Length: 581
Image (tube, rainbow, N blue to C red):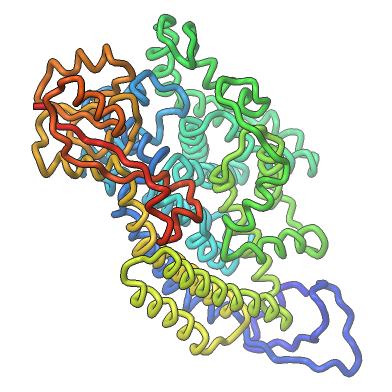
């Protein structure tokens, strides 16, 4: 049954099945269900505020290694050297990601100082902007109610919230894509020419964040839409060509930066060889090279990887997403062709990701606005169907599963304040099961937000603060600030992006004993290295004190032996911080 069944306060629905044209069964009982729009309108702002609030605590947590701290350090060097062109990482010229996210972080440092908050804050602002554009897109392609549901879904989707804590390129990229799509809708509808400029600008920012392949996610659905509806004239419509020209114009800062850093200096050693072109890497190796696994950065892919990744990454809405996809394929009788601008882009991007040989879980994040709209449309269409309570019951079960998992992990890991965390978790479960619901849609959304609250309160207030203490570089940087922050700092035959970011000034990377000898002429100084190398240096006669031996574990690759409080110490490594007199 279609969700567009009128505006009466009550509607009589036969209890059949989810097929939109299911026949009435003689003698079948029916249920009166209240219209969902007024109720949704009342609780939408409150749930949205809660969803945003659940994302906020991660802004003040330390940056997690390796990628987040590496990107934060690259932007830090931009500010320290006032160099907005050259990207520098791992102690050498760095050619992997385009400049836009680093420019955003560096601008934020200029206002707020070089801090964790300053690094994450611009990404958070982009995420908020992405919610706004998700609303606009869903509103214009469907209706306001679908838009509200879509925004509520997107606000607390698991990997979206984690990306606001472990900031990389995805918060910027996701927003630029959905913003470009909405402005392209304005271009298609022949609205103000400002839509052409805005669509080009957001597309350019997306390209300067990840590369030219994002054009598939932005424009692939539009191409399919034009083909399916035989709108061949759109391919020669001057508005699209103006937009493309402006897009190319807007990416010239990126092209110039790559040319100046690499193409003008073929003597630089990059990826172990000289003569590397930054422009060629940008247009080919970083995109097609990864897809075909022929570039300098290689991976190993599995065609089912993003299928099971989506199921956990889109929690607590994964089942709703599956239902939405099935509904669109089998039962949707209101197939407005223009909606293929998101359906087609979702399909093409997902296929591309699945066929690629280079796969990482956070790649799927750019499809979350599309996923949210598909799920929101499904929930809206079924919001007046009595059998939606099945999904509501499933969402309720997920709340209990999340609560049990959190409490079990609290005691398995031996976290501090476990009684407080357990109490908060049980309180959330109790509240969501006590409050009254006026329809199944409200129950689904409330249970989804209850599950999100359980997970994110646990992660940001208890679990991640515990994990972050095992970033030895951050602990070493804290010791430096407490001792004497003015002497230079170096990392000898090791790597720690958290030390590079949190230590005062720029941290030198010393890959050889020759580099170390040159650095030691600048005494007093600090050296961060392994205990074995520290002991060797002390035995060789280096006049130094061991200021700290912080514990280290790679917390982005958790293992049961580390999580278990009884075996954790056996899993830890030690690092050494020397103060050379």
